Structures are given as structure tokens and as C-alpha cells.
Image (cartoon, rainbow, N blue to C red; front, side, top):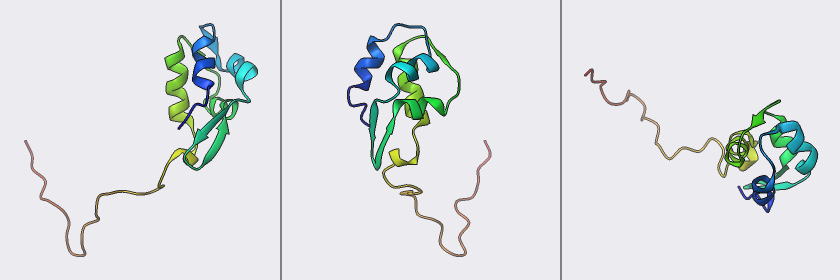
Length: 94
């Protein structure tokens, strides 16, 4: 995910700030994702009304609220499934 200058806008904003204030002032800023892009306003709107105390709070919210287009290979796992008839390792109780 690339903030494309949005990071500097977030850093330069006066805090505390609400999501509504950020959407009003910077909502049209594009965030570049792995498979497309979204606006800052679209991403923050998913979280509802929030109050951010510092820029890092906004960055954390952006990272958690982006859509599936931010994922390189959706539903991919590098862990092989167990073969037919296998149930995996025996559980050990400590």
C-alpha cells in the first residue's frame, strides 16, 4: 500500500481530529493498493466516526480498513493442506 503523499497530509494535520474532519479535508486523496486504488475518504468511512489523537492512529486505521484490493494474492496460503487420510500432528498438552 502506498499513501502517495497522503502520509504527509496526515502528518501535517492538527490533532486530535475526527474521521469526518479528515474526510472533509483530504477525502479525495488516492491510496495506491496492490490491485487498484481507493480514496482516503472511502477507507476512513468504513470505520465510522472516530477521533484520532495522533497521525499514527490514522495510519493504523488505514492499514486495517483498506479493501481486499490491498491483498496481493487473496485466499493464498503457503501452508500445504494435509493429504487425504492425514489429520496433522498429534496435539500435545502441556
